[in-house]
Length: 270
Image (cartoon, rainbow, N blue to C red; front, side, top):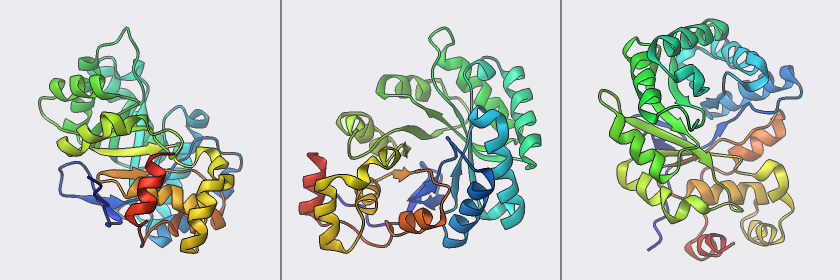
């Protein structure tokens, strides 16, 4: 059964809060001033999710996001940050690092804080304890995980005591639909939002013949079709990255409409 989610504001887990179905990532910046201007334009259009991480460009990406928050007003942007597993290996270290990242960004809290990936020698319980401690101190509103697949996500949920896992950020695109077989159905069932990173495969989808054929029928671009396919799923948001205003506008054009069921099914088989 295919259920197409027509909402452009997506639930953030089971919190009752909603975020834009499209957000903007900040990995791989080549021009920081262009990135800053692109993010301002995105927020102006209503794309209020911005994703970053402590390891992105040695903290410079965080600084850009902080500048944006200062310019547009902290309440007008939803900031996701990610800490390395080592920095979440125990609560006191996690708290110290989280405070340092907030200081660097010039903000008083994250909206969402994730563990960036899994290290085999650090327990999932350790990450959760640290994230919950950070949330208890008021440094983040919500917690989640990144690069956790089904088994790891289940373990993370079992480890929680005080805060829910509201997001799992994983790779997901028209070319890489592995999560559709197990993780995505589970996330929908448990009301956990998926943040899809690398959703346009670093621009490669723009030349895909199958996407071009579908895009032509809708008067859209292949990138818009690829993003629309992802956000047509319940509890899925996409966080492509760009430094260009025209690409931000293109991302925005993935909102406000939906593929029909026939085309949705075609893309599910790509």
